[in-house]
Structure formats: C-alpha cells, structure tokens
Image (tube, rainbow, N blue to C red; front, top):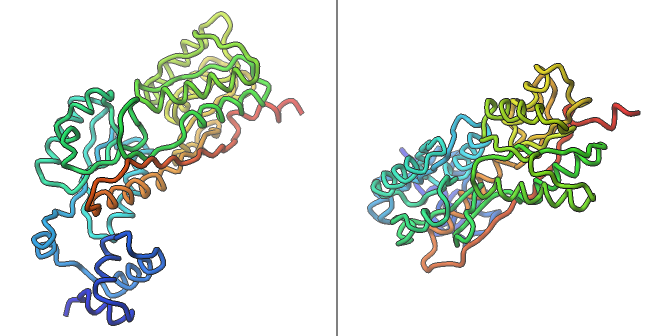
Length: 339
C-alpha cells in the first residue's frame, strides 16, 4: 500500500497539516521540522498523488529554468542545485537552453508560460527594457526569480554573486602578486559582466595603478573567444603581465594562447578566472579562480521561487547575494616564483 501523508504524520507524531506544509516548503514550518518530514518521506518512499494535488491546488508543480548555456559547468551546477531543492518538494524541473539568444529566450519563456508552469528561474540574456516589456513579466502572472544577471533598473527577485566584489577580489589578487599591467577579458553584454568590470577598475584605483582602456577586451563566454582575445592582448606593444578573465572557460582559452605563443603562465602572464568549474584544477596550468558557489546559488533561487509561489499576497522583491571566494592555484602564483 502506498505511503500517505497521514502515515508520515502518525509516524512522526505531528499533524497532517504540518506534513503538508513541510512538503510544500511553507514558511510556517521550521527548518528542523521540514528536514525531519522530508527525511521520513524519503525513507517511507512517499510519492504524492500529483493529479489530485494539481486539481486541489490548481498548480502543475512544474518549474521552468531558462539558462544561456547548459554545457557550461557553472550553469549545469546551478541547475543541479535547483533540482536538489525542488525535487523533494515534488516539483518537476523543465530546463530550456537559449545559447545567449534573446529571441530564443523570449520564445522559451512563452512556451513555458503556455504550459502553465508554477514559476520561472531565468539567467537572462535580455536587457532590462526588453525583459520588462515581456508579457509574462509585465503582468507578473507567473512568479519568477532571476539568477546570475540582474539588468540595471529592473525590480525583480534575484539570486547571484557579488560581481563587483568578485572583480575586485580577482584583480587585487593579481596586483598582490606584483603584477602592474593587469588586463581584463570581459564577458557578454550582461549585468554581471559590467559588475566585474567595475570591480576590476576599483581594484586598480585603490592600488594606484593606471587604468588602460586597451587592456579591457570583449571575450564572450567560451574558451575559443578567450583564446582569440588573449592573442590580441599579446599583440599589444606593451602586453599585460596578468589577466583577469570573466569566467573559467575564457581563462582556459587564454592560458592556451599564452602557452602557444611560447610564453609561460604565470611567469610571463598570470591568469585568474571565475566560476571554479569542475575542470579548473585539471588544466595544463591549474587555474586560479573565484568560486561562485553555483550549487548553492541554484538552491537559494529555488527556495526563493517556492516562497513566491506560496505567497498569498505580493511581497517586496528579495535579493540574495552570495559572497565570492578566492581559490589560488598555479596560474597566478607569481609571488612564489620570486622567493
């Protein structure tokens, strides 16, 4: 016989309402009680009756996740974090990939909303005015949370890393290694890329190092764009002695370009990325990086979205900013070479 919510309630000595609220991540339930209920539900192989539940609640228990690059380890880890939080609550996660294409993003959002999903989690490629003009967001009929990118001027629930702090942390680390010609391979035209540029400039200013516009080069978000952008930096009359890269794939391409030119990393050019993707410590030169806690970011976004879905009245927009963490590996350890 299938396990019922009533069975879990009797087993734990709590009310049926407590079990129901815990399984729905209701804010009335403490974290300790929620954890006990979810643990026992898994142990008893509890499976909700989704058809009855949907009819009773007028929900589909589906959440749409719209991301720009599913092959990117960062977004893959974010998606895993989202699923890790939503799965015990009975939500199905539907993932759409947009390849950083605004038109594809709008199309995917339309399709997901048409399926009557309960909420959306989006890493948007759209500028703020286009996002605001989207019918799904203009009406606010579908709860949504933005992740990783928050377009300027947009009022929305958001979970991301402190991008300015990330940019400043990465650049300050390179400066601490004795580097003074620090370049930046910036990412696509998204809000998080702009924040990292501001952090980069702030670190230079605080260290009294002159900013050179030619040292900021557009690199997109992949390894091939990082390779090409790094080749350009190496061709400058006064090439940089360090590079802060928008993300780890860009940094991987930059390392390859430096090594193919006959120079050494970090002796000639120190390099740091961002993201701490799973292969960052396995490159020819293990990559220094800034960890963005991608899995935690996904979990926090999912938790915030569930709160929005459960809310009976509109709530003030919430921003959850995850602090970056420096991870030093061989690609930037120039100070060690001088000792």
